[in-house]
Length: 563
Image 1: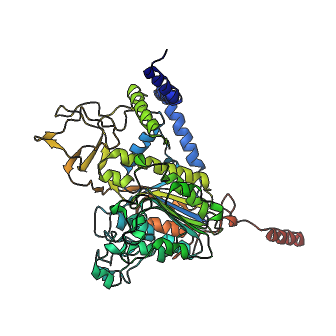
Image 2: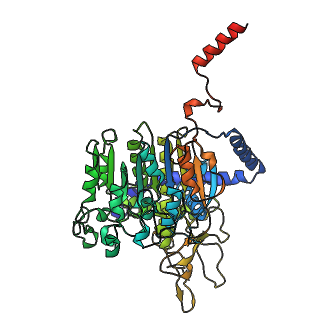
Image 3: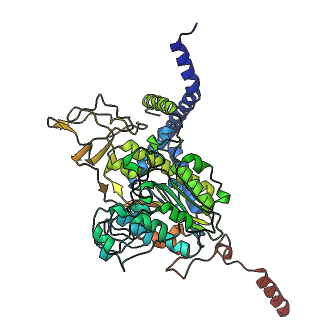
């Protein structure tokens, strides 16, 4: 007769059996790949296939109907590389050879991220660059560099306008998807003009700014431009002060924040009475949305920022993948096209299963060694940042499945980098959150991932902390940092721009960050561009102008007369 302990073990084996088989199979495939990689013929064949694909590549030199801008906030090149390895290891491989969805984009450039007043920029000035096409000053959104941070009277006359706003003016549908609050700097530059990125609601404005006529970002969200799809966090900035939050009704810190007693959700819902508009705050309502019967959708799933992916309650909050999918389904109904901004799978709903998989993965990756991004980095917690980056790439992959490269220009980039790095002569397949193989000069181990500065600086009696007994695979493990700071800082190096679709070939070389907005505006023939790419139906696949049947008949008649 089986004991309860044995029955529990058998049940666990039944539950984990398929996962163990899949992970084991992937590990064996990884080992087989490693064996093939020993031979020069493997690399020669891979390079020839890549070369053949490059030789077949032809620019799509026609106008884009749709524009999608994916923004990985804080997603520097080192973050992309580490996320690639993490995704591969989550799927049971060694990781390094994995291809992210963004890795498949045919055109890549580097973006210089400095702002007019900062060598190392913030998310507000950079957002103004890639949304509006001009570089700006730190802390300001949707304003030229003539505006001075926090000085309200420098707002007026210095407004600059985003690709989103220009797309709307030409009849396209527009949307914003973010895992932060929808009033955050990155989405805010698409619709707002503010000398302070932190003026989320009117309660955040100084009295002098209110007297001078400055308007908070939440109000501008629903009054400056009609945004068809708004998905993210930021509920508390939309409702009157003291309004209980529907998800956390007893929490005082999550209540409505507005002093003007306006309910901006109602303002948005009533703005277009002839359209079918819906507001949701819970995933159940979100899932029930009929995209065919919905013209406009606002979903605000948290009072402030949405939760990190590793802590997301999948029964209450949608993922960035799900929000991106719903946005595209609604926006794509417009025959004139759309503009969508998306900021930032292997995930399992059950917390028990998540913990089991984590334990299995740690064991397998150890045995087969040969075999919200920005906020996570600021906290010095790499697992939060990299998990967000993996989910962000899943959203890019899902968008590719829902769109056509022939009519949709998709651009993926970052606003800035972080002082995040990984190294230490780690062997192939080393767990990305694991240790470097050798100890440091202080005779203590160190993780491959480190930060140049941040809250992970911990010294005891003048020496670095010993992590021998620390669970550095934990979701909230804070990697060690070289310089003590309350919050890790941005990095100043260039970030990558990936592009595919019509006019994507214009993304190449090393460019200023504001160039991104100009490529998107030109590709879709938005202001200020008049001399635009031709419509796709005016060119054949070879790029030549089509000859209409009437022209053919005229040419035949002329040849008949001249014979």
